[in-house]
Image (cartoon, rainbow, N blue to C red):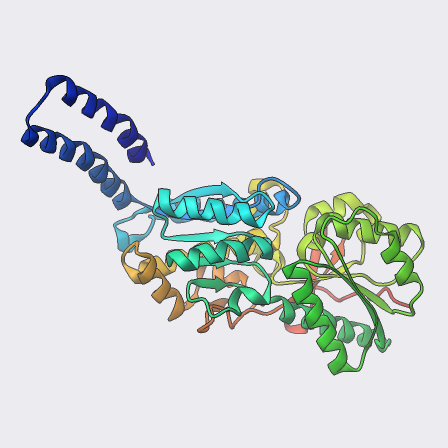
Length: 419
């Protein structure tokens, strides 16, 4: 952007000087050409030694902590790439991150994405954590033909026929299905047949998609849904939800919510001695803030997750050492997104969004941060969905999250707390 700022300052000065000198037409045209050519050359030279990558995440508002976590993972991997020689196919060009705060509102996500594309010549954008933000942002990136790489959940992200969006993890309905399938298997292993459940979910793109997966899977497994209740994001009083839950014979409760709502739900349950197993829908259930806020109430809480740091400690321990907390899944998956983007740039051999899109669409990516994913690789289908993603079930054990399902990926045995 240095060249853009120089252009805005230089052009008025040039024209004022030309007016004072009262030059002829040829002199005016020559001076104007020089004024316009200088920033263009600067822009070109800058692009040769760096590649602009956009990052749109919520750094303020209700989802700010998730945005900070995401940015931390992206910045760490960008530093690793640059330290290891940058993009070698581009003569060692460095990754230059252009970070923008989407706040926690979809309109802002779309606005900052548009500005980023027009002002910074980004080759791709990573973001925007919350599905509602990503859906708004993707409308802009699709229209401008800029690849968008995301770890957001909503089925709509890759369900609209877009060609420039790439979803690195399972969609929400798949996560919701695994959330119940894993729970049923864990309960069965403890000698309890799961017959009735309660679902409560925020009425956003993420919550509704994941609840749909839970609902459909319950029907397939012959499990009765005795409570199926939506609530507004940022709910201030969960008492009606808890009262409704208390009146059911549910054996487990499945809240699909972000941090603050999830904290209210579980704290209210436990304070009222409702000891049902809680199986969260990722989001706020799998970050250190959850344990810090709930203390002993967090112990034994399970959650579905699209990934977990204990799958590749040789990679994720660096994050813990650098930031002082374990590598939460949004940081991990955004790290994977940037690493895959760097690999796509190596294949494309040019910092061109269309060439990058082609590489992302037609390549199975392995090695590096792809090893942190459950199948050690990333492969996008024609819709942009990673076909190799696999959901995990994790459980709080003290200060750590332990993968407890599926069996081949488990790092510990699940503890079923139901009666």
